[in-house]
Image 1 (cartoon, one colour):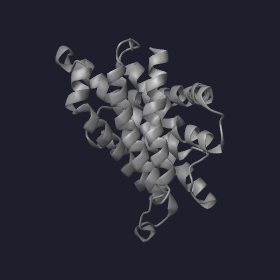
Image 2 (cartoon, one colour):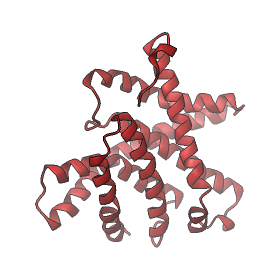
Image 3 (cartoon, helix red, strand yellow):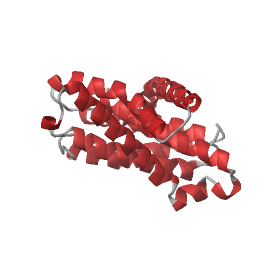
Image 4 (cartoon, helix red, strand yellow):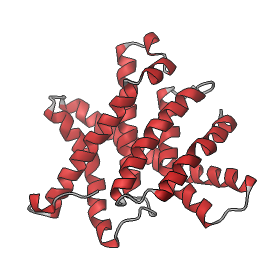
Amino acid sequence: MTMNKQRFESLDQMADETAAALSQAAASSAFHLFRDEQFRRLARFQQLGQTEQDRIFNELVVASLVLIILLLEAPDLRVPSESRDYLGGVKNRIPKAYVESLRKLGIESEHLSDWEKLISMRYEEYARDRHDVRAAAMEIESSEKSLDLDSLSKIQMLVPVQAVAIGCHHHICRGETKGEDELFKCTLRSLSRFYVELRVRFEGGKITPLTRARAAVKRAFHRKGKKKR
């Protein structure tokens, strides 16, 4: 992701602005899925009250925010080594940037505190789940063929979006995920698009490996979803 550095007086200011822009991109992506007719039908929105619909929207926003954080700390993100510290600073600012945007909208302080706790809690959960997701993906891939560097690279690349999609789906369904495969796939597709678009921008348009990985995600998670649910 490139920005005009001449607009900013310092790298800290640039990191603040980048985090703010990314947090709003997360909210926009979540809102797009939230308003998607297929998603709303699969989530049975007509049967849900406003409070429950709001809860689902919040989970979608948090999922996108955490996905950005996991992407920025991914060891295989192909960015210049000198950019790592800067991206680490951006990553650390993501939660506060979103909470600040809510503050500007007039959200009360007690609710802002709840948001900070929710983002932190989901980050810890989804970051922890990365290990299980990676192990499961390697097991599935190795059952069909010997793992090579290309396979391992694709698995590593997809870990953040896979972990977030599984966790987000679990919370949307309040843990009752049996029979909700289509809802999971719909959520996964949306998060995958967001993830790929962001990663391509950060990596300067290096699309080829991501294209291969994106093609693999449906196959891998279709099988994983059948096993799990």
